[in-house]
Length: 505
Image 1: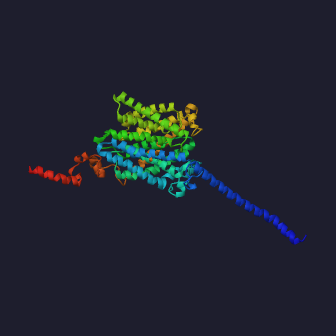
Image 2: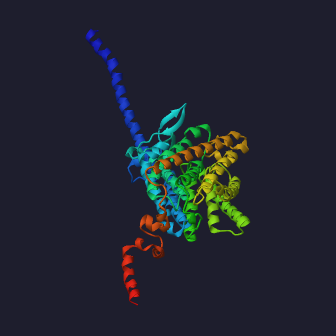
Image 3: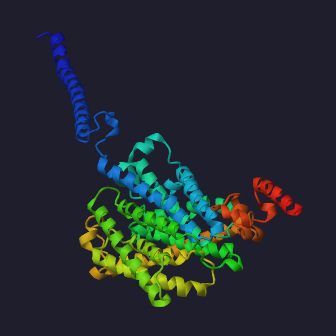
């Protein structure tokens, strides 16, 4: 055979398989793309979202979980505005109702701004500080890129994943971040300079809330050591309670004549407490990150403990003060909500009852027996009702965590009653860490702010209240009590003719 033909045949032996491989690869790629597109179309039809672009319903997205998490986040938001705003306004003296509500409203708004700029990723983003494998701090980067907001939720140093968009998780975690300084405000009502509050809240949220959230919510070093906090007993309530104690100490007391709780509106208190109680279904029910069995267990346990705690507090009032009160009943409901929070998805119904009894009695004793000895003017007793109640709940989690319940959210978790005494020890250690860190940063931050802005409103401003602070009052009859030089111009004009008429007589 001619050598020329042999060369052609040899070249064909090598070239033809190569061409076939390219064709097959292209065909396989097309088939794979078609299969993926078909799967997305099937998922869209199953989820009844076929009218939307396929990209809006990726295979990792659970529509049920996403719907629940957005709803739960809205419930938690309503706890702050209007829930706590109404509750604190009603508990305050009449002349401070506007100031109390506005402190809450401002905190809710400014925390969202800080959260988007740096707070979320500082508390839930990729680690920026790791020591011996332990995640210490997240990375304070903005959370607003569109591709990031639309991506699947992945958070913390362990890259935990949820089947919801990152935007949903950012919003859900924001309402927790917001309610923490909102609650803290109760310790410094009726005397803090509003300008100092405006500076304090954003820095406190970034320097205290985000790091503690990273340690206990996002899988940081306390989580890595074994500490658990189902939905914020430590991250939110110990933070708020201890922060309130430190802030009350740094700011100083109310006017001597006003150092007594004088709730001026029981209807406002009841309305606020109701929103807080039922909003807590989203607070604890949303923590699993989706519409799971554990979410349902957490909601049920939340309401059990709250009801028992409210009744227990009323019984304590009757035993010591001879009468049950609405203020007391709502206080007991809130301590029940706080104490069950770190345990809600880890315990059974019986243990929820026991936690309710503890939360209706131990914080009561702290409020009426311990706090007076501290000689710190914590206006609404936030240290007892949130700080102490949060610690009680966190410690009882270490005792009562039931493997028959934790199997749905954290299968390795069990409490001391089930043989794991280490859990109780690490819960106590975590409480101590949060207490010391929170107190030190809060007190130090306020003292630093105090070098530039007075922390306490002037006595002459406090004598008048809302009108001197904000130029408005919650109730029109308060205008009649203002000094002449403080009254609105329109009211002065109305007074002039009447004065002249009186003089003419």
